[in-house]
Length: 326
Ligand SMILES: [Zn+2]
Image 1 (tube, rainbow, N blue to C red):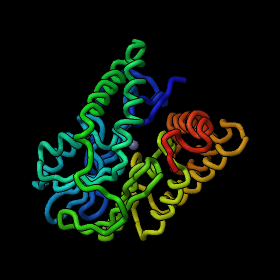
Image 2 (image 1 turned 90 degrees about the vertical axis):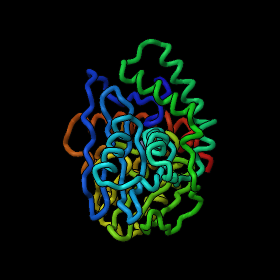
Image 3 (image 1 turned 45 degrees about the vertical axis):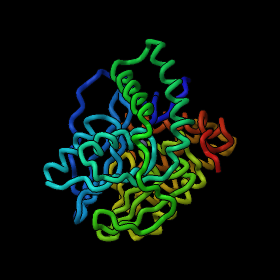
Image 4 (image 1 turned 30 degrees about the vertical axis):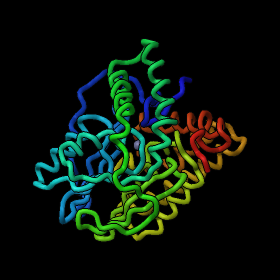
């Protein structure tokens, strides 16, 4: 199997189908002053992470800016429709499905400051540089669907302009911060889905935005330290949240997050055992079944991704991703 980096450059788990024009993502109200612009995962395309917008007294706080033009356009359209400037951007982590819109949003709103961990510094010269090389080779093979090729070329351009993705304010610890006049708990999860994940709890709405600490149809383990990731899920659960917005997928309840955490731990334990990888993948789909729904294609995708992560990521690197330094 060709090396894949889900949500970063290549995702073979995306099931090939005919190209189609994506529908513009629509903002949904989640709670008072909290909105979700859903990310997508279209056939032949790389994913977009969810965008969460907190409406602060002095402007909008945008958590994650997607990969594709249509995701960032939806964010700009939202700001315009609500007659509010984008005052700040929070990046949950450096994967390109979460940060690629940063430069365009900053161009439109030069006062917007980016809050993120500094994990992107190593990623730009390490993981993303290697992924770009692999992606260029893949493009040269000629055997790439047109939409996938377009995504890869855009990702390479985003990486080359990587300095523009970096934070203005480095999140180096968990703390309550006032951003755009709004009080938010901005938390750092070291050694989780990446070396430095940021997740946000809003005490006013009791909404928690987890970034890729929670992703469906499977945990995206490409750059993960499973132990730190599980610890971070415990910290999310320790907040009195009512609604959780994952990095990918629909809003979740407390029971959903508990189910996810349990399924995550069971999957990691299975991958660390000598059980068949197929058994681990089926276990994931079963344990997370209530979150995946009954759609057969989603179930299949969940199993395919879990199989890849068990075999080619976790087992290939002693129970963690090759990127995990912990
Ligand atoms: Zn993602």
